[in-house]
Image (tube, rainbow, N blue to C red):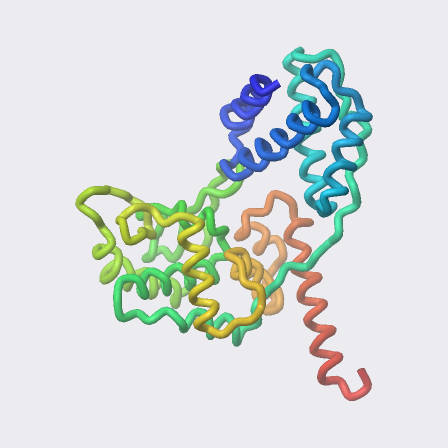
Length: 297
């Protein structure tokens, strides 16, 4: 069964061209699925899997306290896996047909208000190359709304300061161009002129835009540690994740009258319904303001 999983992962990587993080997610879900089939159902051949085993697997996950979002993701992984097996004629049937996806709880993304964003962006002290880098990263994230994986994936050639845009590679290896404002461009230029050179190591040669203290490309974990430290210094008590600035970028654009389609394009969302969640955020914040300030609210 593990060999079939390897074939599927290879298919996702080579033929589908999915993003690395998406493939890792598929692999993690399906490893837990195969482990369940072996240990709980005593199944050693995928040909023997029936619909009931998949339903019981979902029940098993639910007992572990998994959210409906996690269950839906597991169903999608299992369904894609069994469809692949049937298409490759590795099995004679698809037991995942008619498995219902649980209704998702629609949680609104957490965003920072304008004052909190300003406070966070002002935290990095641009006295040394670390401060210059951190300032440039935060400014660029908020200016473009790009994902953290896209931020750390940027190379020097992806930044065009004179033209005022960055080129990034998003999910599914899709390329998009995102404009950057004057403030972010100025922070980037200062980092490139005065900061990045001090990160460069004789041992490593890396074209990455943002480097760590070893002179290598900054990692997601490295950025996460930097963000947590800066948020603490800014005194922000809200739960802050690397995605928070992306959410704030989209919400603030829409609050200031930006076109939904334009925001969708900048965020790199394939489906506009994904972008529409930010319209719910702005409506919720309008209601909060109304409740707080209207005399008859």
